[in-house]
Length: 108
Image (cartoon, rainbow, N blue to C red; front, side):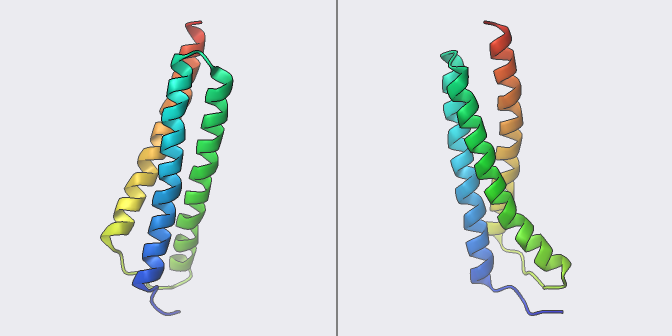
């Protein structure tokens, strides 16, 4: 078993997750604005960008999970709990946005 992931390493990973999921959330809200204007091409671009940002955040999360699965001890900190919450909420919001885009398009 390898050593303990340092607090600093964990915080960097948490902030990577928060940053990228925050970027995704901003793009999702911009997509909602485009949907209201019936600009579905822009909405699609925003949702694609949001998905890309979520994937980057998820890669940071996956790296940490792989280290844990490999036997590395990880001390959990509140910032990581916040980061995980932020990512999962944004992933859910993206799913809702995709469904709402479909509904907006049906109304036109």
